[in-house]
Length: 424
Image 1: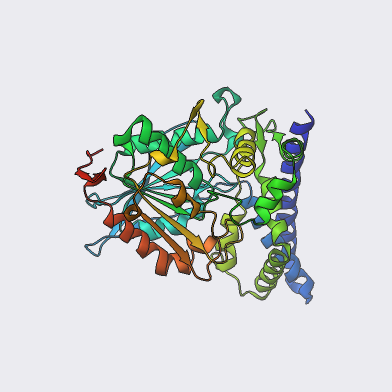
Image 2: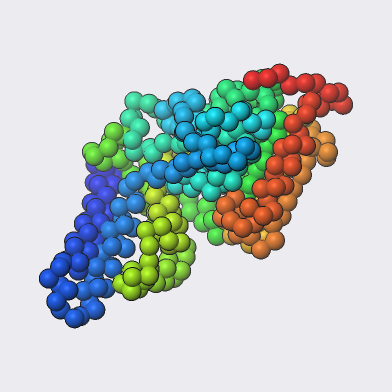
């Protein structure tokens, strides 16, 4: 009950701040206030508007907001987001572009389960959609999943990726962003042994912690400093009575958000102070740069406790992927069994979350893969976010990834022989 009460308390604090913001905005905007020539009321309304918006976003899953895409014919084609394969902890969704013939590039974009919704990759999706038949892993908020659905840890996550790859077929190109990179590598290795014909054609790993010890960061240092008991005691709570997942142990999104903000508290404080000033002066807009970023950044989701704890224990502390000792359902997954799936790694020079060296370590683990099917790229000056959504992604990385996909879309090469992959 203590953990459940703490969860409800955090939700109450969020709800209270949202109410305070809405109240302040209403009071500061009251028509009679206009008769009083005091700028304090303008600042009160501005503070309320920014505060209410910020705290309300923490409880809402953002919409993809992708209405249409321009096709090769120069026309706008409407985009539907269809559920291709539904599962309790996450769906495989398809961005179905109406009136457009199926694109030759079939891409599975694996979104991270690290506190934010898959919509964090919205700009990545927008950039790939004109050139690809795009599928995305849409993970669910753990607070909304009944306890009766069971557990969900790193092994279950890996098996979800296996099922998604099997469903899409062997002509799929997988792009894994950040957290899922080591598990996408493990899923591909799992298929290499269990169902080789279902393996994807290529695997692009972007800023993922394949070997967290290769280049230590604040994230990896934190994982090494604390014990698993300390993590479970301080980070894990039970979902409160308000949600369908009541009683489920989770790492709450609100708690994760406080950690995210604490890493750059000065920058966030300045950003919100500046935004309040802009609103008070009438210089802000509903979809300005600040709101576009924070509407997504503040929208957080709960992770299952077992997924969070097993990620820290097995990926960061135990280095099971880095040492090729990862097991799924009691069976060791041998990354060296990958022999005909092209693998590319992408890193950012200034990435302070998955620093350069952590992701490229995947290529050394692929001992059965010829060098001709390995590639890597280090983006100069790019931080973590910039390697999948910023200027570096748009101008440099995206074209390289599409070239890599095209270069590995022909007949599959196995042990020196060409074999045409069966259509999925």
